[in-house]
Image 1: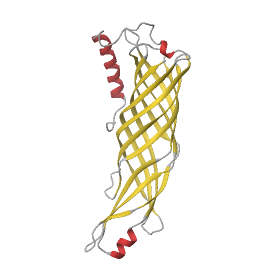
Image 2 (image 1 turned 90 degrees about the vertical axis):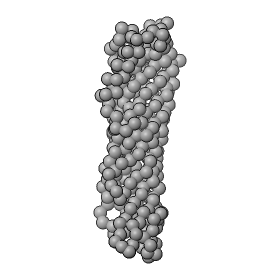
Image 3 (image 1 turned 60 degrees about the vertical axis):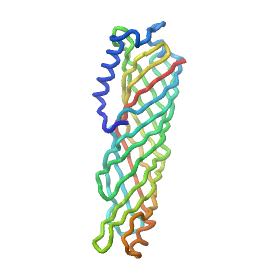
Length: 265
């Protein structure tokens, strides 16, 4: 997922692309043999592939050293720059134009906390979600093949994983120390709401661009044990630092945008 993606811009682009595709070439867009939006009637099911295309995500975090006098816990706030995301979901229309969906996806972020002494490495998480989507009654373009929708979902994130690197600065003759602590955080839940556009590409295929704003309903917490990877050169200090433990809490939230290709049956 490209970093820091504004939602309004791709929404307008998506509408423009769909409009230009529909009007520019009948050879590119297959003709429908049935009326548009038969796929959104009650009883229709579909399998969908989701690909992340943008994000504007942030993380609020607290890092505290366990059992040591290192001052107050560090309060960190920064961006979660999206690298990629992929997922699948099963969809079923319980009423005309109103679907329920269930699925899972895998996301990878690159946190940027703006702190030279504490950094988070590439963060990954697998998510499982249950959601709903409602297609609004508007049908756009001369072909009536473009429609807007609203959606929401509840997500369970079983685990968040990344490596936390800490740099401690010392006066000479000691060297600066660098420690790496693998983090495996506890599960948490999030709530998402958003919308998007769907274009009916064929009688069986729907192509959607959508987005969610996601709020955490809790925090991911965990304790990490560090390994000294760059020593100070003083054996006593190095022994104190090697194996230092941290209590870490994180709360990610923000915008996620994606492309969605659904095959109905």
